[in-house]
Image (cartoon, rainbow, N blue to C red; front, top):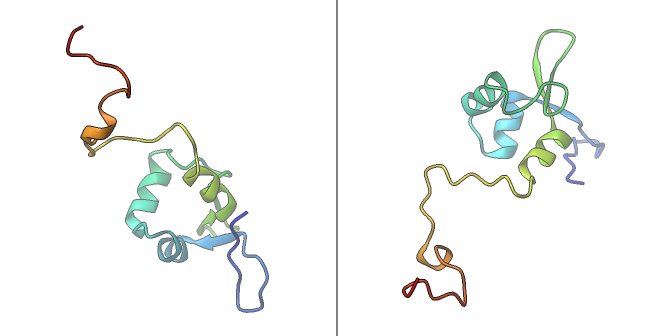
Length: 93
């Protein structure tokens, strides 16, 4: 488990969107977009605090960030080394 510790060295489960932006490298706008478009599900990656503030559930964020098999190629081009299967000569097919 990845843990965020506060000054008294206790694990922090929830952080504000601002703090999550600082910790994850995503902008606050990007985080709010992920929340509003449903990419980050409520009560799994984020939740409402009793005072109406959106909080990021860090364990849920780490689970989301470490998903296997759901890698997006959006905006990326596969390199030449990954665009073919090793050991297969497709030129004669």
